[in-house]
Image 1: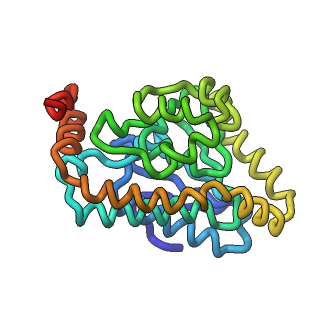
Image 2: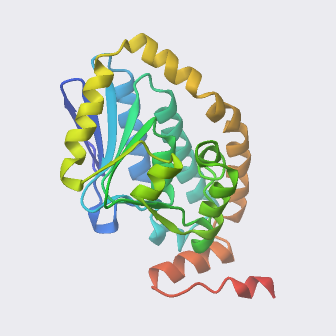
Length: 261
């Protein structure tokens, strides 16, 4: 198996496990991390002995999204690498033949929440929290939250999530249809395995067919995501991104009002 540096990849019976392994920064991902995630999804996708893939995080967080220390000193070149790898990874999650389950053990915010949105199914601990951080830190969640999430929780609610950058409890997310189930933290892994075992009793060929045809909205939205990515590239390293990321890293409130003067 490939030697991964930023994630833990395991296979137990017919279940593939991908665990983001940066607990010291709440499993936020940089280019190298999101690229490794894509490699792992691709490898499992080509493995006919794997029937389900589970994505989770080490420690108290599922994923806090993009690593903001990088965004404080960003550039168009760095953005091209990050966005290309992020787009590849999310597309692999949607298009490998196996169902992908997000096992949400803690915070899933920013790009971490978009990993949840792009998963086929999501099961969360009662301690999990969900939300987007885009305009609060000088970015925009164009890989699922500004588009696909509306198909799940409704357009107005999705706009609230993306514009206001609030956080929502696991129970609130469940009630909106954002996730599939909430369980106590101590039961999370066992519950996910139960779902995996139930899926493994289903026809792999017809699960794949069901996944492909369930991707109709994602596939229709893909051109819009590609166009939005180009806009993000043009804004990379700009004043508003730098202000947002620097403020977050410095634990202060960003001054975005200065850009309206």
